[in-house]
Length: 77
Image (cartoon, rainbow, N blue to C red; front, side, top):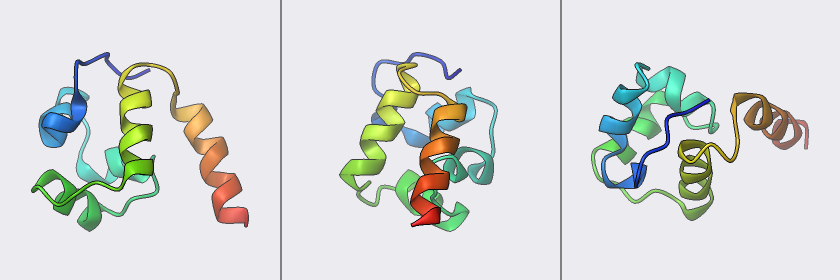
């Protein structure tokens, strides 16, 4: 489960690094490519649905298992 942080969106890179993950590991759970995650970490606007998932993950409301299930359903469409 992710660490609870006050606002992971203030510094996405610092949040990711606090989890000890590289960009591919972190962003893939949200169905974002490494290059997309890099752009978000560099200040590009994060789409609201992804921002909500990141916040929910950071607050422990969802975990990797649930994100995996959601991703499978999205990909299956």
